[in-house]
Length: 66
View 1 (cartoon, rainbow, N blue to C red):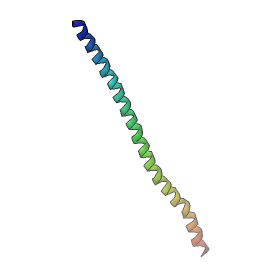
View 2 (view 1 turned 180 degrees about the vertical axis):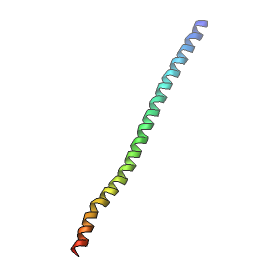
View 3 (view 1 turned 90 degrees about the vertical axis):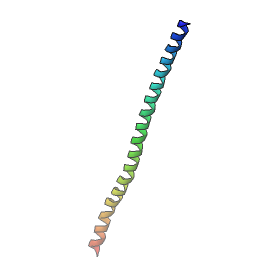
View 4 (view 1 turned 90 degrees about the horizontal axis):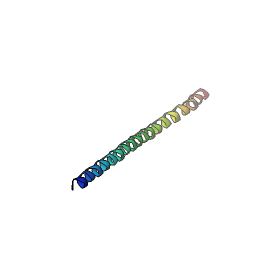
């Protein structure tokens, strides 16, 4: 009976190790997802800024033509 108890304890330890590895992978993927969301949100703001800057020379040219 001792042998089976050790065997079960060893199996349990192996399962906990596997679970720890899976949890680490989940944390890494969540971090990547968070980074992607931040980049996506920043890209929208940057595009608005670019559009605004690109329109400025047109406004200046229109003002000079008057």
